[in-house]
Image (spheres, rainbow, N blue to C red):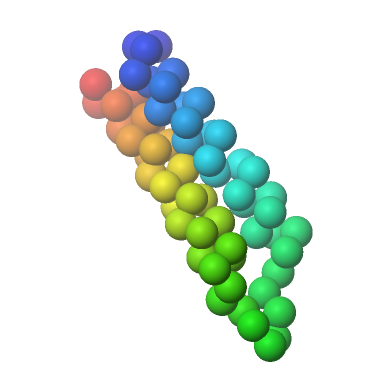
Length: 62
């Protein structure tokens, strides 16, 4: 694999896994479902997912 693939893979996993675990372990409460920390974690998780998708596309088509 190319160095860019490893960078995307490492950054994607570093963002996606911890934030996904946090989001699953802390479900939204009924009173305040969208706290600032929850929005931040979901944004970081989506960023990690985008990096993993970019890694896949680069690996398959690059």
